[in-house]
Amino acid sequence: MERIAQFFKFKENNTDLRTESVAGTTTFLAMAYILFVNPQMLSLTGMDESAVFVATALSAALATLLMGLLANYPIALAPGMGLNAFFTFSVVMGMGIEWQVALFGVFCSGILFMILSISNVRETVINAIPAEMKYAAGAGIGLFIAFIGLQNTGVIVRDPADEVIVALGNLGQPEVLLTVFGLTVTVIFLVIGLKGGIFFGMIATVIVGLIFGQISWPGSPVAMPPSLAPTFGQLFAIDFSSVFTLQLLVVILTFLFVDFFDTAGTLYGVANQAGFIKDNKLPRAGRALLADSTATPIGAILGTSTTTSYVESAAGVGAGGRTGFTSVITALFFLLALFFSPLLGVITPAVTGPALILVGVMMATALGQIEWKKLEVAIPAFFTVLAMPLTYSIATGIALGFVFYPITMICKGKWKQVHPLMYVLFIVFLSYLIWLK
Image (tube, rainbow, N blue to C red; front, side, top):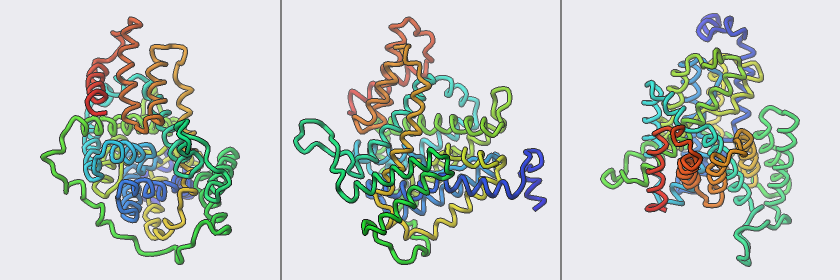
């Protein structure tokens, strides 16, 4: 115990083994929903749901353990919400790219992220993208995720008369009613401040679904972990001669953009809550970014979309977590979860839908950070946010925003304030919109 305390510097961080253990448990409960939401979403691409479950748990465990041991931060990682939606609906289903190739794109974005993390270029890239565009991308992804949750559960449907694009579904259907119940109870849990509110909301929904016969119990909830073979290493079994295209380049850049800035925002936000920020700088930032970036190619090899830092780590920090031992405890829970794969059978869209919707709500709070009175930033930000759910594509939303931003800034006479990298991205994304959409 003494060696553990010395390694993680309990005394210097004014914490102890019990506090860190409770914090790690709290973080796991706050983000455990990803174990079931991610496999369900990626299975829509044709990937084996059970194998993705194993890949999700393993990538989360390994990445979180790496963050704890390498950077000594109480920050957990797992396949990111939003990035898995981009992988599924934009890349595979939207662009028609095979999931194996999409995983290769995730792998490449992770390698680029690693290079940025170990070089001084990371600061340049962070400063090149306007803050408003970062906020807009996060909020737009939130709206997109919420829209998916509403659509998958039948709350929002295609209008049968085709007079409008979408319409309110039949709220009297049992599955829709179960979704509404799950949404309501989860909202209550979150508003009253219950740690792990989304996870406990899913549990409550499952219980009600079992009582009313909408969900069938699988028998024993415990079993040996399923095989990882259907997804493990499949990204290397592709035809490399026809892979490197402008379309894949846009996919890689989008994966990189969202992961890089989502990670930076999460790290600084959680670290600030824990009191780690000193002189507006994050100690061991390089190690934290390296741990996060390394997780992405590992996850891609295992068979899941981009693995990234989770803002739900703030729940553990709120419970007193101050060192990497919090992350170690969270990682152990993810490893333990490998033996509960039969529960995938009870996690229906009615159970995961409320989680998607409310994660979307949390991400949409970034809208408040945008200066809407400045039209030169409000217009490209608005197009970014609006286009993601309406075009069913995160890449299209980002592309429109990055195309309009230099235009509006030039018209405002602020062209010198636009980083040269933004002009390069303007050309890349304009080419994507013209020739690939």
